[in-house]
Image (cartoon, rainbow over all chains, first blue to last red; front, side, top):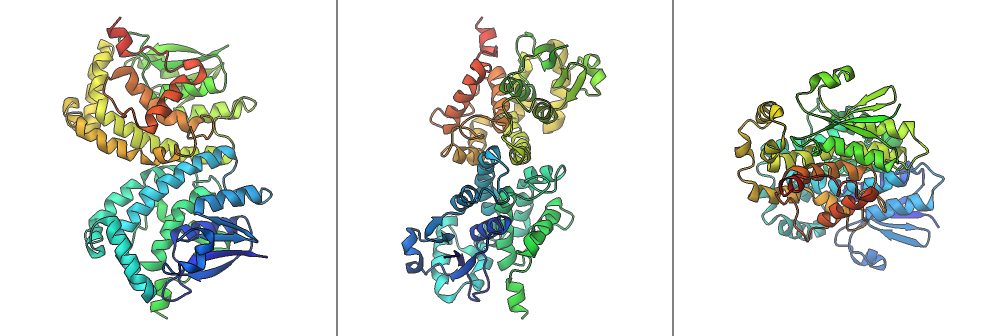
Amino acid sequence: MGRLLYDLAGADERLRFSPYCWRVKMALAHKRLAFETVPWRFTDRDAIAFSGQSKVPVFMDGEHTVTDSWAIATYLEDTYPDRPSLFGGPGGQAVTRFMNSWGDRIVMGGIAALIVADVVPNLAERDRDYFIASREKMFGKPLDEVIAGRDDGVKAFRASLDPMRAVLRHQPFMGGAHPLYADYIPFGVFQWARCVSAFELLAPDDPLWTWRERMLDQHDGLARKAITREAITTG
Amino acid sequence: MGRLLYDLAGADERLRFSPYCWRVKMALAHKRLAFETVPWRFTDRDAIAFSGQSKVPVFMDGEHTVTDSWAIATYLEDTYPDRPSLFGGPGGQAVTRFMNSWGDRIVMGGIAALIVADVVPNLAERDRDYFIASREKMFGKPLDEVIAGRDDGVKAFRASLDPMRAVLRHQPFMGGAHPLYADYIPFGVFQWARCVSAFELLAPDDPLWTWRERMLDQHDGLARKAITREAITTG
């Protein structure tokens, strides 16, 4: 039996935009583990009910089911210790949990507030009501209002990334000379945005722009080759 | 020749409050390396001119001089690889640089804005003008004004620590089961505040309060035994 990832898809099933699934796909590529994906939509609850979860990523390794991107990353590290490490040792794993927590709040929270409305037109028709209702509840207002001030909001978002930016003055990746899971955490969120939105989160002279470019090139350009809304809308 | 740390001191030379020196002292204790300290004041430029720096920490290991808390930590890790690791491996060291960067901005920046004026009465007379002028320049206003709204400001500060708080739901220290340098980074700042200010940065029911207590107990209570302003003023 192979490895299978239930992967969030849009109206076009080639559009795979979940930030958490991207973390997992980059981690699998890092470990050089072959895998297949199943396109999944928010409303496909029944398809993953076996996992006990209502959201992806849901990952099956043979008969083994693992859910939650962090749990999948540590599962891969424990199960395939002979493959390239995702954490670079036990201290790395412990401290990367902080990066995970920071990435979820500052990077995911920050980017969501800037592009969440852009997700909607990319969604499968049957997913839209669920997405809009759940995200409006999260933000406490209509999604157009959430992103309304984003030309100003992006400045505060960029400033909030200073801790990453400062690291890049000393090393090309959060993981040091090579990317580790500490890179895949924030990168997954940028890749989400890249898949569904034209809004420019970073300025071209930002060291984070260059880092993102380097990340897009990793693993034979896995993320760069991904189908984005732009590729779909421009044919 | 032994190990010597130039350690920022207050009017009472037993009061040692530098957050960066605390990171180094905790790192040295973690490595189980004996060291002595020399009390140093901001205006004692000549005493450390040999190092090329105008600020502490300045650390001498025999004939070797190292400055800057991060550089000292990596020096200790490289020079004493047989002692307990400060990073838990190369991945840990790379990702801890992110914690250092986050700690300087969010923890140090956040706490300074809440307690900077409290530092002044603890300083040696000859340091006060320098400290006030340099910090007022940093904040762009008088120090009393910086801390004026702190009863409200502390709420945003506490919220900014959510990424650490979330990690503590899974492990007792940023470093995992035991503290690593990733803990000493934010802890050094809390210890700075503890030495010079009565302002309560954390609520007693905060998991970070408990973490701070655990950190105070490390290395035979090195930080808990330190002389604070309270010990001095109450005799």
